[in-house]
Image (cartoon, rainbow, N blue to C red; front, side, top):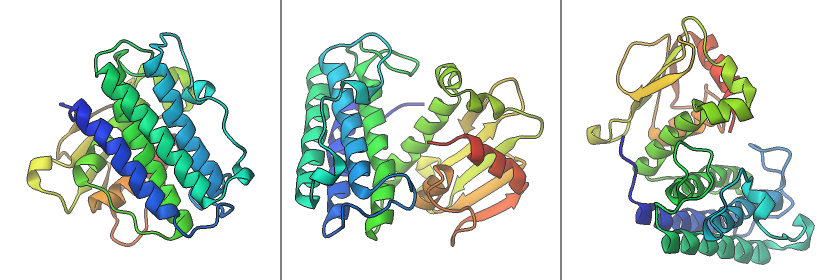
Length: 263
């Protein structure tokens, strides 16, 4: 399955960050984030910017060994030290850092990743979707509306399936190894996208490891929803019984997956 061009991801990091910043306007930095209740809005911003700045360092310095991005992100202020204007500036600066580092490196520069290939292109895609998903959290906290390009949303769902089914992720988070089991198949169907996007996924967890493909196939449980809502459900940002979401078949299979495959 082809990915989006490297430059599109670099552009999208800035687009998603700008939309994130827009969701902060007029908000209280101390507001609890309902979808990440251990964080305030300020802590959410510092987390996202820390990931972006860390990815920038990995790419810029061509780091080759296992590295959690936030460990090389540089010193960040305390959440209670920043007002919304300062958080906005901090977020904008982090996005510019990673976009610039990725553009200068190009997609094939060799760096450490937790993906299949040790290339900078991994981080362009990862930071696009890191920002897009946490923007859902920012909107939940501030009350802003969340919309996302269906192409980005579909690629975001692809990336999550690649991550959660990868041996590296299973080794890092053993709970992912619990996903396989008899009868565990899922079908995700976006109901509002252009047919050319092929926004349907079949997830087969009946074997020793989880596999998936873009396809319309019979499964134990089917989730049908508009693309944005499908993304939110699968990333556990909205309940499966939210308006516009239809679940058909074995709800326990879906619940089992969502309890373990957390972002």
